[in-house]
Every structure is written in C-alpha cells, then in structure tokens.
Length: 305
Image 1: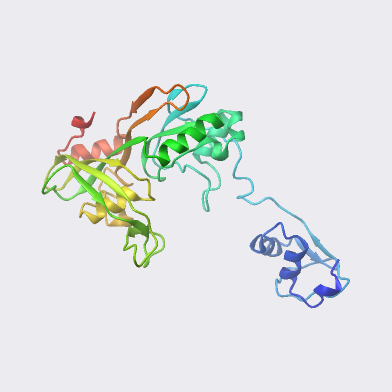
Image 2 (image 1 turned 30 degrees about the horizontal axis):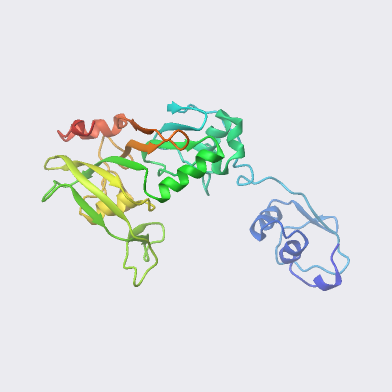
C-alpha cells in the first residue's frame, strides 16, 4: 500500500522504498516482465506515478545471479586430493567463479556438486583464479583451516606458480628476465588491464620472471614465474615486452590455425601443505591445442618438464 509520504513518486522508486532488500535494476526487470500490478492492473512503466492508498503487488522471480551458487555436476580433472585440499587441472573455457555473463557452469558450481561440504566455505574453497581461457593447475581448499592457511601463503608469496606460454616474435637478449611493472585498469579501455604509472593511475606493483625456453622466427616458448597475482599479469607483462601471447587478441596477440584462445597454461604448482607442513609439487602438460601450436612453429617446452 502506497503511504502518504510516497504520493506522486515514480513507481520504480516507490518499489525500492517498499522492498529495499532488492536492487532497483532487479525491480525494473520485474516491471518489464509484467510481474508488477498497480491497482490490480499490470504495470510496466517505471516512471508511472503512484498515489496514496494505491495497492502495488510484486511477484518476485529468481534471477540468474541469485541461483549462481548451485551444485552442477561436471567432470573435473583432479590430480591430488586429501581431506584438506585438492588440486585440479582446469581446462580452457571453464570460468572459475560466477560473474556477469557466467552465472552457471563454473568451476565453483562443479565443486559444490562434487563435495556438499564445499558450500560451508567461502567461494567453495577457491583461493586463487585463472582466466577463463587459461588452462592449468589450481589448488582448492576443502576445510576452513586449510583455506585460511592457503590464503595467508598466497598473500605472503609462498606459493610457487609457473606458467608456460607461446608468444609472438623471436627472443632477443638475456634470459631469464625480471619484469617489474605496475599493473592497473587501462585508463583508455576499461575492459583491459595495462602497465600504468602509479603516480597518475590506480594500480599495484607486479613482478614476473620470464625465461625463454625455445625460440624461432615466429615466436618463442617462455616460462613465467609469478611473484604477484594481478589480473591478467602475465598477459600484460608479455605484451609490454613486445611478446604478446599467441591468440590473445585483447593484448595484441594473433590467432593461429591450431589455437583459438590465449596460449597460457599453469603447468607447475608448489606449496607447503597447509596442515601437514609437507612441501608438495604438481605438474601438468599444456593442453593439446597449445602443444600443436608449439610444434607448428618448431618449438618445444620439454626443457621445462
């Protein structure tokens, strides 16, 4: 019922005041879907004015976002598992965590289906992420004790993460090479990250060690060791070196016949077990699409294995 204080308000504003636990955009969606009735009639115009005493009825419907944290069975490649953690080899194309445009079919959904206890943990135990089109190793906590310890290790840079990448242009100069360039949101294109001047733009210090393993006229295979974990860090740093990742069109890479996604694979993971204190290491071969592209250029990553 519309109160005297709401007289002559826009309908969408009156709805926000009546049910503040829902966002204005969500309520506007309900209006557009015919789920709101004003004085018994379907109302679809957010700007419609309401009067004191008007009866407004709203039929709430679940949104894709509200249903994002649901178990969804899916095949997962698990390399290691105990009662405290598991290590998965994520395929390219799998989103790690629900986000706009990907509210279902994520690794989180698969973890919830695999282990009901995962619902008791923030983000189902996910402590770090890989881009959707980056393949490779991820550690996932299975208990809160393990999760807290892994988060501390990652923050202290005690977890070693190494990647293999196929990049454009032959390698010139010394190897390995340390790239220490701050990374932040690209001030010109908000969908990208970029190397930024911290005196002028928001960003964070970032460091990557890069080692050339094999080089040819077309490009080279590099091993990247992360010391920080900024969004798109390797992709941004390699582009800054003049070696954008193959097929990474967002940062200047070019698609090749054998490869339709960025040529980046998290191939080695080393950490101290959060409960036992034992140092453990896992390794994963790059996916077949990266392997085919590497062979097509007469290159090899065998020295890294």
